[in-house]
Image (cartoon, rainbow, N blue to C red; front, side):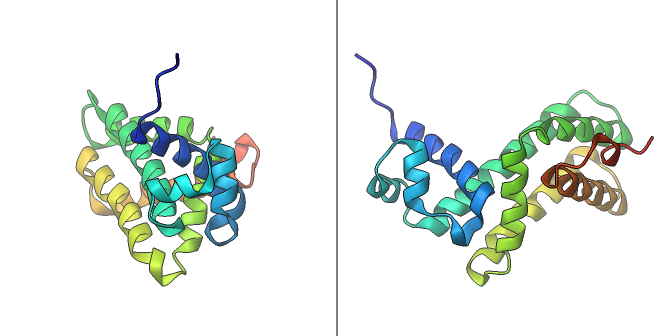
Length: 170
């Protein structure tokens, strides 16, 4: 007999489905019924896990942001000096770019920032990444902003599926 999934397991399953659906359709066009179908659960069960679509979107955005911050923390560990730490975090981000759905969720979250109900949490996620990079690296604020600007360029290149020459300045 297969053990029954916990609510935490189901939440993760729903968030994984939501990443795909929000990446493809954005916040406003995505439906909880499509997310439920992707997750293999009933739509009402989504509302047992998340109070509404907004909270599911915020949880999905947080999931992507947390993954970035974990990758940055792991990459910076053991590196010496701000530039070495930023370089290691940049290399880790290149690996994250391979998950196009998560990149598209970031882009969709930024676009959803036009919605006053989503602006504050999306802004908090974004600022959280900036502050995390600053804290981990010890780099000067302007250098952290350059790092983030480069990351945003990489997001656009990945979202548009541009050739590798747009990812590296050789």
